[in-house]
Amino acid sequence: MSASSVAESTTTAVVSAKPVQDIGLLSRIDAAFGTAPRPEHFTNYQHCEECADHDRLLRTRDRQTLSLADVGNPGWDPLCFITPEGLAYYFPTLARLALAEPDALYGWYADQFLFHLYWGYRDNAFLQFCTPEQRATVAALLAWLIEQRAALIDADGSVDEWLRCWALWAEAA
Image (cartoon, rainbow, N blue to C red; front, top):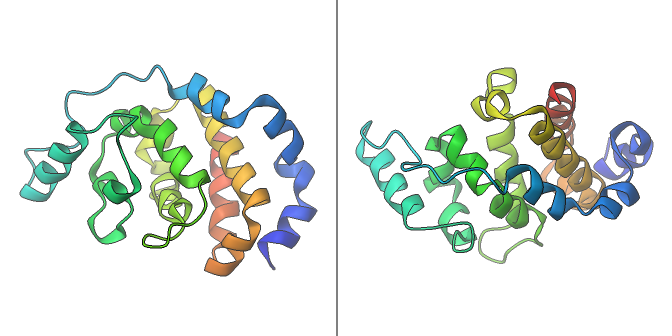
């Protein structure tokens, strides 16, 4: 089943695009995550050199300067090692990257972002860290992407993963 047909058939089950747009998705994300404090360290930097490298990079960025070039390579992704506190801090920036059109070099970031929201399923440390309001906001972001970026989801063949991830966050909200 394609994402576009799933989106059409589950519009009321997920959330219709108009209400999400009406409430201002980015404003909702900023309200839910914008006050998350910047951690002193973003990874377990003493674990290994790779964790230390990723921590150094993330410590040199903030919400305004973190870019797709920093997080867009799945083979060298500092978010694979980030703490839930660090992910909450960067969430508004990462959501904006996920909402953006595909990049010529890195492709569509939302597919990679999905991994961080879905990894470990119910044991996902970020899911467990988030408040109910933050979980509902993540679910709204996922619903918007499922509806509005159905063609990109179809192209990647990841419809089932997107729907399961949305259900995970929506149920936990």
